[in-house]
Length: 358
Image (tube, rainbow, N blue to C red; front, side, top):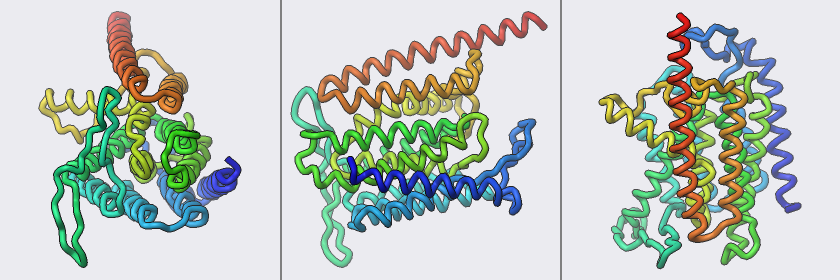
């Protein structure tokens, strides 16, 4: 544990210091949000805080993680995601362009040797995706698994957008990322779990750095927020969680359990929008966290509830193995349906009571 203390402390102090400086500098140079654009009646607060997270994470990784091919590939994809997201924060970009960049960033991971090559099957032999291979010749011949590449792209795109959609409440992406990164860290250093423990050192180090960066930002982002991260921060967080979960040995089931509620919510939102013949990329206020607010939860109570759910299932993911994780996923699904139904019912009842009083 001692070898991870310095990277975590450095990343936390650097992120915290950058944010404190930005709180004074950003208002002077006009890097503020536009609340009137969204019908919000409050004073503008510093925006583009995601750039500070990117800087702190990159500097920390360069200082504490050896620059092997996988690490360089992860950082390159992260910079690409952050750069395009920053442009989107500044002036708005086509959702298709953003999607294309997400796919490209996932392909960069695959090219660096990071991907989902198999999924553990608790009821039998693992499901292998390397059976369907194609050869690509550039400077030499490369063997590419089409199924592994496809699953990696789907995974990265899903987690990036799931985290971005969490940005409807101040403190939600930073808090969930803190929990997810800490879970991946503990899973990486768990004794007796990995065949080659040394291979887990880079992912463990980057996970604890990410956790420290996210936590430092959360201290300023928790409602009421003093600074906002924008898409730059939320998509950067999503990309890193997705990449670290598959960096060295698949931790997909673990990441799914930690992000279970946001992932299931995102899936339901996409299905609902398609059934209503709306674009799945067009935002609305029907996510789970919005439903909680409609049902009478305060923003802080809604945040604490979601944090608690992520932490409980994250801890479960670290402690359980095999079939036990399948049961945990089933419990998660049932709980999501129950809480979602209650939130919709209570929200509808509250609106009905307001209408009746009028």
